[in-house]
Image (tube, rainbow, N blue to C red):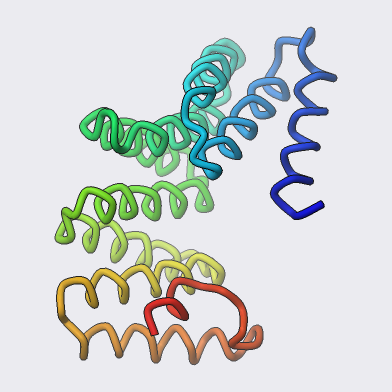
Length: 192
């Protein structure tokens, strides 16, 4: 069983266990299932899980779960309703910044950039990716720095800005080599 299948199994078991206990744990289980569905491009069940997670999180005063679910829902409607996708990701970012959840902030910036890449609004994508990279550097989020550095490089390559992309890739690979081997899959490796 692969990592995603194991994650799905754990999330679904948590959901079944918590189904009759309306609380933040159930909300997070539902948002996690939605995230896994979204990552598998299985968008129809995402809305139901996210909307339920948001309702429970609102009842229990958990803005972190609201931000997580809105992020998932936004990504799932990228193609069907781009304006709503952008609004949901912007709201997720606003909430995450407000409650100082650095991982959720980085995730929102990253996903906002990927929405714009998907819709080929490369200037907006670059702005989100660079803002996310700056945030991750300021909060010492090494993993997000690698990912976002690669995302910035990819966008620059799509724009034909090769030398600028190269600078981001060199920086990303220098930092990456300090913590792991270069055979790991990161967007900067794809951009190379």
